[in-house]
Length: 233
Image 1 (cartoon, rainbow, N blue to C red):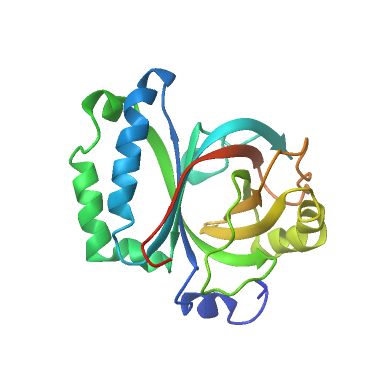
Image 2: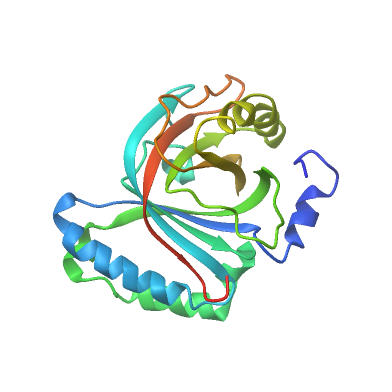
């Protein structure tokens, strides 16, 4: 379903499965690695108990690429230089984040579940996204196949321009690559977009260039460090 079709947004809002993504980018000094990973694994175990959260994945940056104009400053969620960690929460729909169960978990986290040295150093940004398209198209009731690496794009632009570039240039270049599993496009609101290409095996040298009619764009590459599906998924 293309973003340009009448009623497309309303149709997405009715999807019971697979239509949401909580996208969290964070930075942390190497000195805190010993406490971050065990805490993060425990916390994500709690997250997966929340109804409507289907999968949690954590990635670490392995390389960065830039395409298009100079990256944005990072203000208001606009594209910025890649962060060290990326965590993706697959949701049945974005409204999961407004449920009492998730709000209760968020309150616990805000109360300081992380060790104090880690809490002082950990910082990041969060985007609530809605899935717009998948390539190849699979049932919305199924979790999209996961790779062990991720090619990630943060880009600004009009929906129609992003979709035109994806369908005519980016996806035809990405999907035939060795190890490519599939591509997902998410709308993060206010002209912000996230595109992820799932990969198995090595990263190829360069991602597709971003056309000049789109806004600031930043490519980056991540290696998966953690993945768990919710019980029953």
